[in-house]
Length: 125
Image (tube, rainbow, N blue to C red; front, side, top):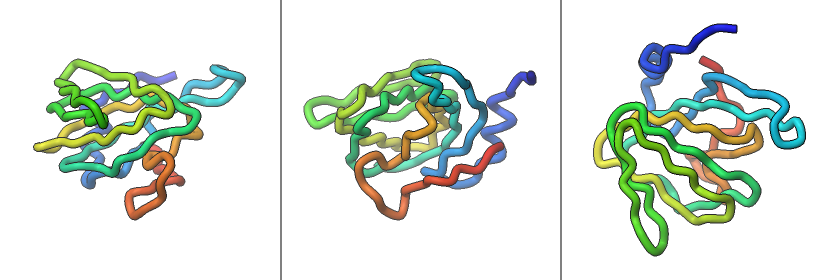
């Protein structure tokens, strides 16, 4: 059991759109582990959705727009947004943003699409 310093862990990330595992919680939702991931990003991601997983985006530093087909929600530092499964979305950051993700271990960052941003084997910090 150890505490995690988000600032320290985020300082280890030097690229965008490449989530890292910062922690794991076991035994939730039929024993599927949930992960705490850290990521930095800038610019627009790909439109995608997740078939079976909700995603929680918590902004540690900065802000970004979560774009949906019918609206855009601005998530600022200290705020979080839960994107329900099957909801098409696209994160878009005008400036670099630091984000903590809380999602099931089965969640692939690009959801229903596969491209150069797809990460399936995440590094642990």
